[in-house]
Length: 194
Image (cartoon, rainbow, N blue to C red; front, side):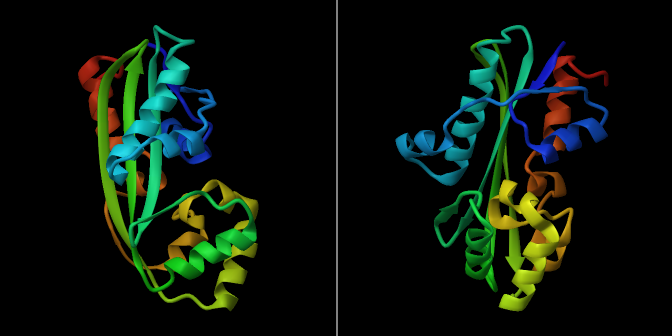
């Protein structure tokens, strides 16, 4: 069974690769801003809607494959954050998150052709310690452009670990893919040897 990840996310590709899963990565081409604009519902439903839209876009051109779609939202004080588009916007995000708790909502699904085979959503709660402007500047310099690919302007697997005073939730979910649940489905479906 061919596995395709409907994403070019380096973190998601690395998680699958390091878990021994050979998956081709293909960008979905989904316009997330447009999809978000047409959706009304709570963040977990929105994350699942986006994950399924990405998987469906790739599954149309690869109907025999199992296509994995994933999406992650950061929610703080009912505000949904997108990935920052510049270092200045990343600094603004970090200043807003400073001293506050937020939720990462991560959805994953598997589609084959036009059929949704499986869907799963998990959340994690992270509390950012109070951050000084000087630390934010050092942090953004250390992380560089990689930070623009991350909702919340942090990579937990990098300097981002220094941002937090408390983390509640699954590590893989925080990185952007509920890996353990996905592996369970792939074993149950026969796509992965158990």
